[in-house]
Length: 378
Ligand SMILES: Cc1ncc(COP(=O)(O)O)c(C=O)c1O
Image 1 (tube, helix red, strand yellow):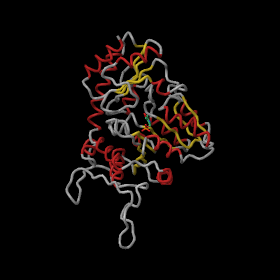
Image 2 (tube, protein in one colour):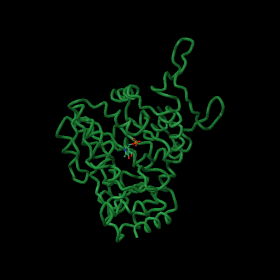
Image 3 (tube, protein in one colour):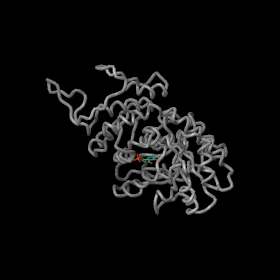
Image 4 (spheres, protein in one colour):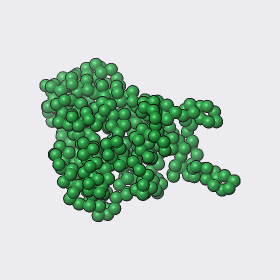
């Protein structure tokens, strides 16, 4: 695949500059076909069967690969379909190193399913300096899996330093960049080998499609194995969802810019609020990871922040029922603002503080969002 000469904004807006050769249509078609005819020499004409690949999906994958500066990208039926297909490539006896606080679905996979396959998992504390390096060195580490800003406490992990630690141990670095999309952080440029996104979030951006993405620095044996595993496990994205994902991506840069600006205004407004113990947001200068975040998130600090309520779980849940604009629902990265009591959503094994409310800031008017949170806290 060629790398783009244009900016990411232009690449996204034009969906990779599409003009249909047969009709001149400037919007890519949806190909619902599940199977593809061979030519008169009985040769395939690019596609065979839609569980292997489909033309609408390939279009999205090409744009995603260019967006990440990757050699190739693959899309999946959900974020977790991408995560579990990627972990399929780790062998029994090998180790995966990951942060203790991270997206709970991927952590659940590591806690529940890795052990069954004889995979060793070491969790490190992202707030402790040197903890990642120690975890990597202690076993036969195959994969270091990180989030540049961990969900939902938003502690910052230095991607460049993590890649150096992983490579020194002969491991690869895989980055869940769901909350740090390529308009702000390009993980491959910072030394990552694999980038993952839940496409359900910022990339699609409208809370109406479930999707996952993996992108690779190199089309190597591991990548071929991931591609084969996708075909065998069957977690492919349907053509209509592929099309919706590409359509959503065309405004990613605008949405992200507005969401990040709104979130920073909200974080600053509530930083010293009397009903809150703290506001967790890497864009605040008081945040311990601010300097690293500023270095690696060059397009803004994103829409995600957490409020630590001065109160218990019940008080936090009450706030999440009193908002009128912030919708009390899980997920993130969409155009509408959401609020959730994270420990309730994660369930009884959650290690998230009981007084934490996770907020995903949308593109509404920021003064109205602030007024809404003010009245819910009052
Ligand atoms: C950081 C992160 N990674 C992965 C996922 C999983 O993605 P999906 O819900 O699309 O399977 C999520 C979903 O919330 C997420 O927030």
